[in-house]
Each structure stands twice: as structure tokens, then as C-alpha cells.
Amino acid sequence: LDVIVCSMTRLSRAPMPATPKLFACWTPSPGASYNLDSMKENTPLQLADYIRTIPNFPKPGIQYRDITTLLENPEGLARTVDEIAEKVQGQGITCIAGIEARGFIFGPTVAYKLGLGFVPLRKPGKLPGKIISMSYKLEYGEDELQLHEDALTKDDKVFLIDDLIATGGTAEAAAKLIQQTGATLSGCGFVIDLPDLGGMKRLRDMGLDCFALCEFEGG
Image (cartoon, rainbow, N blue to C red; front, top):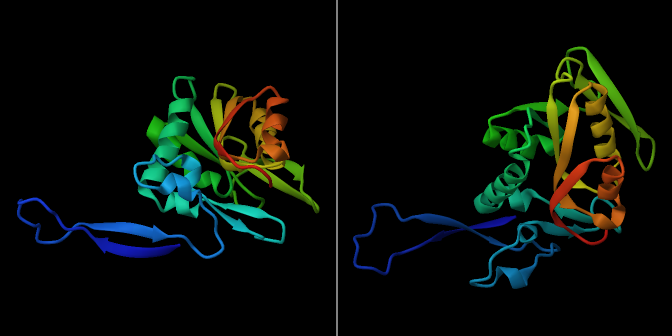
């Protein structure tokens, strides 16, 4: 992301402050695509407009949905956290769970917003206490999620958060791991859905309530 620091001067007769206010302005990075029509003056930005697409990353044919431009924008980040929290509140949730790694960005911020605790679902070898685990298949091989065995109880009502859902393999493993503790998984929330890859349907077929704040076509 290219950042330009701009100084804004006042046109009124009010005295100028000793230090001018500074605003961060951004210019599109080469190779990235944005919804520029929504960025015109007086056109409200949609949440997807804060997310840039990087073609052919991490390998040819992949359209990478880059959330760093969303995170770097104060309004975009605040809207993301507020919209997830608004959808989750009122369900009697006792804690928020998040999937390593980007679920650790949105999960704790939503938990803080709602006055709840946060439970991390981690990759192998990261948790020091006694753990339970759930394996899942990748395109090439397998991976695993782990959870401290005492992190949740049957009295907990959990909401799972991650940044993106694609094929849904990781989210499905996370959901099963939470359910393995005896806790109730109330639902799952994502910032981005790639509906063509079927992950959201996969979770709904498990009987889970799910939502995403925005979606992109393709992979």
C-alpha cells in the first residue's frame, strides 16, 4: 500500500491550529484491483471496496483477497468489527473463538466489543497445556487445529470468527473441534465469502448458522 500524507487547510475565518490536521490518503498499488466506481466522491463505500485483489498470488490462477487494506483503514476496520458484533449480540454467546491466524485479528476485537473472552484455535505445537485436536484435509496433505482441553465447557455458547471462508475445510474442522468439547457452537461469521467454492454451504449442511459481510466471485 502506498501512503501519501496530505495536509488540509481551513477555508473558514477560524484561526488555524498550530499543527495542521493530517489525513492518510492512499493510491492503488500496481497490479491490484479495486472497485473504483464506489470510490468516487459522495458514493458510500461498501465493505468489499476496502479489500484489494492481488492476481496470481500465491500461485498462478489465484485471486488473493487482501485484507491488509481493510485493516489499514480506520473506518473499514471499525465497520467490520461493529457489523460482526451487531450480528452476534443478543444470542447469549459466552465467548468468541477464532482460527489461526487472521481469526486472531477479528475474533478478539469483536470479543472486546461484546465484553466476552476469546478462545484461540491454533496450529500444532503452539499451545502449552493439554490439548484436543481435529485434523482436516488440504489440497496436498493434511493439517490440524488444536484447542486447550479446558478452554470450553458444556455450558459455553460459542461463536466462531475468521476472515475468509473458501472451501470450508478449516472452518469445518474448527466447528467440530469446538463441538467436541461439549460446548454449543451458535454460529460462524466471516468477513469474506467465496461462494463459488462452497464453504458456506458446507457449514450450513452441518446445521450451523453462518454469515459473511461481503463476497467475491471466483476463487
